[in-house]
Structure formats: structure tokens, C-alpha cells
Image 1 (cartoon, rainbow, N blue to C red):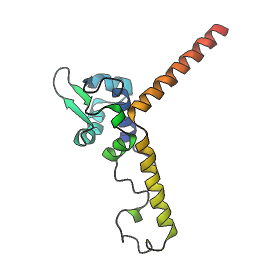
Image 2: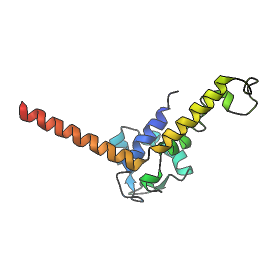
Image 3: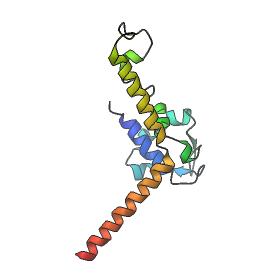
Length: 152
């Protein structure tokens, strides 16, 4: 399974927005510039997030988007669910009885367990945590670059 490009960009954009105070409007042009996404594509990928009430939007001059919830209350699964849900792994999980083998098939049970595990894992990563980890990673890279320059 590969997530769609829309979901990937949505995750990146929400991570960027998570670094601003909750409710602060982040200009659309700034999101586009920092995430290398076109305004039209950003609008498209943000529509499901607005509908899911993860973000809000403000039109007009100075318009943009804002997080409707604190970053610690928004998870990777929330974004995935808004953009791509439902997560089924295999079509036999779509609807009970859609597969004639689902009552005895061990693979059906395995797919179900993998699905539940993926949802659980995606739900454990919130955007406050991800933003903090990204900042720590950037700090570490800057430190390594400084050390490399000092020894050169």
C-alpha cells in the first residue's frame, strides 16, 4: 500500500501548520512555498480536511488556513482518514460477507489484524510530537554541519 500524493502533501502541510499557534491563520502562499505545492493542489487536498473539521479556512486578503485543534490532538490517522479512508488493506475487509472465505480464511484474520495495527500505529503519531521530532532532527543536522565546518 502506498499513500496517495495528496495524503503525503496534506501530512507535510499540517506538520508545517503545527508549528504555529492553534487558530493562527497560515497564509496559503506560505504553505505552498514551503511545501512545494501549487495553490490549486493545496486547495484540493485541504477540502477533505476542512470537511473533517481538522482545519479551517479564511478567504480574502490575508486568507489562509488554520488548525481547528491543538497539534497534539491531530494524528497521522486523522489525516489519512480524511484523505483516503477507509483503510481496508484487502477488499475482503470492505464488507462482511463480501468474501466467501472470510469465515474460515486465516489470511482474512491476518489482514484484519494488520489493518487494526496500522490504524493504531498511525493514531499514536500526533503532530505536536512530529513537529518536535522534526525540530530536533533539524537542530542535529545544523550541529553536524557546524562541526564539519569547524574541522574543515
